[in-house]
Image (cartoon, rainbow, N blue to C red; front, side, top):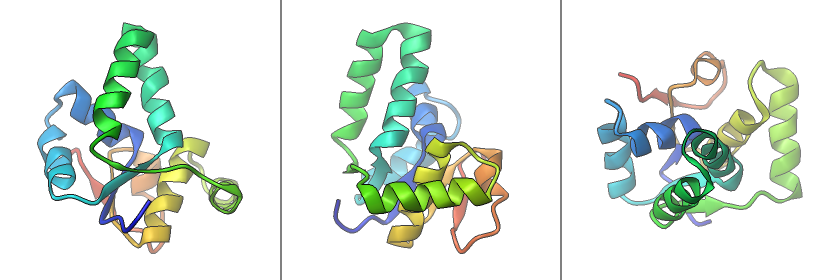
Length: 130
């Protein structure tokens, strides 16, 4: 995956794809280079879009955004680290992967997920809603 300077969760990626008010902030992080995301979070984006707009649209969106990111394919170590985060906190398993990637790279996590924003960890969550 290489060195990551910012991590995007599904919330941030969906905001970008939908052109929401926070899209500009997410776009700046990507344009600066070295933005990354877990394939687990990209999968979350896929199923969210597929439910709303179909699998073809979801596939196109994932292809478009993943080309611009450093992507993380979790192995056993990161899967267990995310599971440990999930076991200790009230957040989704997919969100736990975003947290795990951000912590592993000591990079800020761009998100709008309230469950992540309230975590008391060394993680630096960046609220893309603001």
